[in-house]
Image (cartoon, rainbow, N blue to C red):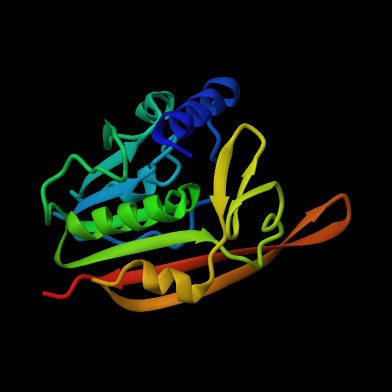
Length: 206
């Protein structure tokens, strides 16, 4: 999906449905008092509020202007309309980069570009936190397959389903501290459905 298609799909979704992401936020990084934090694909700000505090400087970036407008009403973070594949920040600008359910909405080449950009803006010794759905998730395989394990559903938004090995390989210039899969069940009308998410924690060597 090209940038224009992707942007329009997200803009339409946010305009029609409002805040797309809610609920509890788990396993957020604990920044130091003067840390600089960037969240890629911040959406309507679900994670941003949990990242602010203790004097940290938090920046949220999203491709959809309508998402950034929603986030502005919920968080004191600095907000930027921008593309994760072409980050408008200098190399080594951030102590922590969070990529929660953003890279998985891109095609393979763009996933690699966004991962490289996230690593680029991370300072030496900094940390990158990654979270995306696993191939074991209930939605894997649903919709039109546009690339291997990448599916288009509903309003045209892509979702890629990862393996742990694939996540590790996505950041060749970072040291993987941990890459693990979290599994749980979602009960719908009395039937349990498997949910699965891969969380990665990477460090940039000094």
